[in-house]
Length: 368
Image (tube, rainbow, N blue to C red; front, top):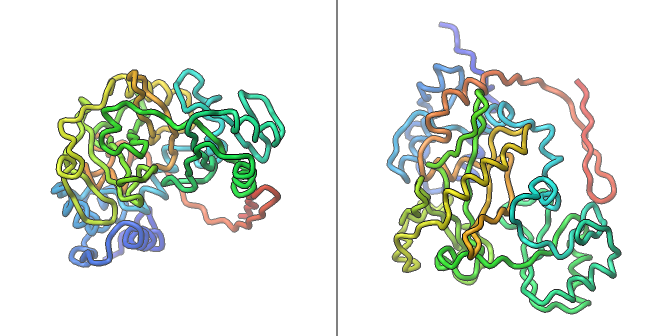
């Protein structure tokens, strides 16, 4: 009997398993029980996916399914079929968000450093003027890198820094960073953890027919641990699902920890409803229309005290491990369509070399 030929190669399949075991599963989880059993759903569509993913995800959310996306199918086939990966880098710098989405409320930027140049209110300024601008601001500030970052890497809080501290920070961060006002979020969201900016991750998908859909089963609230300023699990925080009406679920999930706890028991917060949730969704669907090259976007957003949505950042390769851990197979009713699109991806092997120039800019040379 001839061996089935899959879209994803054995090398990609093993990479997907390795990535999942290394970055998602805790060491103590027994992934071998159904590792060699393949998903019937994906086999019928030409992909090789282990039922190991169902073993793990269903152990947390109770949802058994053969439709969970494996890491290789998602990163090597789904993402390239939905988003122009070769255009992605042009949208990476968080400093350009105000140009992309001028109609949406964003944190006030006191100083921006773009490619080694300082800017304030859209005008280029000197390093000395940038120091003065930070010194003149009288509120709490946040400094963070703006290119190739995730999980709150490099985020620090500034309170009344002197000139020497500011100059030292400029030297340490080098290029591509911003100093922003510290956001004052809606008091209902702040109750979950007063010290961190408790943001929501929401997802929108542009279908083949051109309609824009909000993937509500996977929306979740993220909050930091006690005393943390970052809203991620590495800071002792957790995530809770948000239903279509904005009600925050009591279950707190922790990534790579195999734990599900209670929001009420941990924080005393219960029956939390995200303020102006419908307005948040409408805003994101409107924003997605300004990204014609990308059909799947993960958005980070919070809500201000007056109920207005505040956009923080977007992700063009949003991870699906967390959403699947909480809410079941990613894309839900749209998965058939997404996999049909993924079947159109062609793998072409090329040789590459990477050159890095001044200011840390990589350049890739491809030769077939």
